[in-house]
Length: 105
View 1 (cartoon, rainbow, N blue to C red):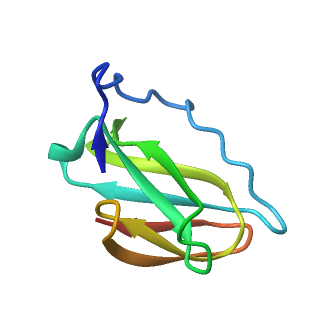
View 2 (view 1 turned 30 degrees about the vertical axis):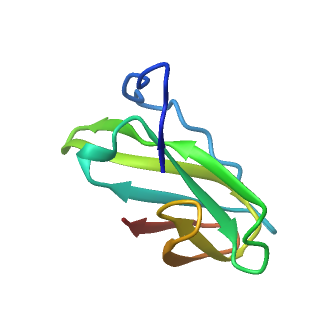
């Protein structure tokens, strides 16, 4: 996880995340503690740990309150590693075909 030098972005508004789901594509929503706001969290397919992608933790405002999460759209279904740092995986998450998978860090 890395903190951005140019500061955190604002919260995501309603309808601001578009997910492309269907055959061969899933998505992951990774819920995080508030103190990770503004940090990037890397993930990789378990079988390709050196090929990582990252996304930013942002506040998500809903009718139920504010939560913090990272959204990874358009993932190939399978197992993914969520990286704590450059060398340490924090957890493994299964991304389902055509669905949104959820995990908590």
